Length: 296
Image 1 (tube, rainbow, N blue to C red):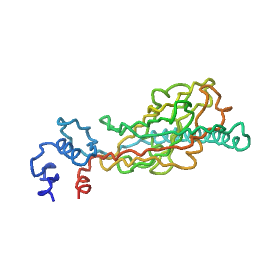
Image 2: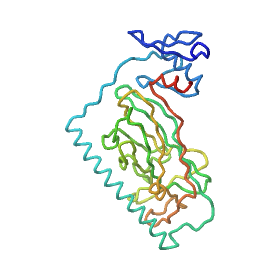
Image 3: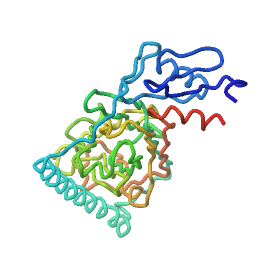
Image 4: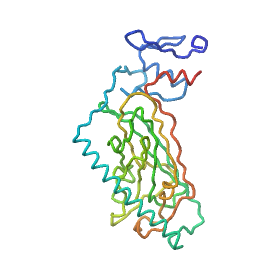
């Protein structure tokens, strides 16, 4: 197959990894990555150092497991307990609003206008040196320009091979608000990120009940950066396997507002008609041999 179809072949000569196809040898793995992208349409990145087209010489090093001191473990434990408590408090407040809508029509959605929301994972990249991070944005857009962003909850699944397990409890994930949502109206999403399982994180972006004054961001049909996520890389192997996991719990607390300034305590419960979690395109790291499996 290699000889007939010009697929890339890799071999270890006892000193380094070599790559070649029927037409040429590649004098660096960067050129092999570039050829792979042309063939497969998939973006490959060596997470030891992000490649630049034609100008990357990879460092063949093995990442050591990060050692965490007992003091840091205790600090992580205390910080995580605060996040769990705050996330629980917010969920109770949002559930109270939902239950009120079932009992009082004034707290429920009355308009027949269809309002949808779209979430995308975008701008995936490897950043930093030691440690290194996999970073990406969560983009948000609406089906109209008539409503305001109030709250959204997410469960994101990931591959434990490059990232490890329980990344929230181990303080390996950091989430910040996007530019138009980085104000006192909205909570710091990093304050409520918790583990949903050993390979899933749960967090929210939404109105701060304790803000006092609110000025919600208007949703538009053009995507806006809702949040930026960075996860520390533990092992430079595997794929990220990021994907949104939609549950009844996340759906119930993903709601909008028809006013920028109404207190969240007095706000009507306004769920979206449809929530679209668009899954990211596969983003591969380091395992160059996956190309062969894809092409066979």
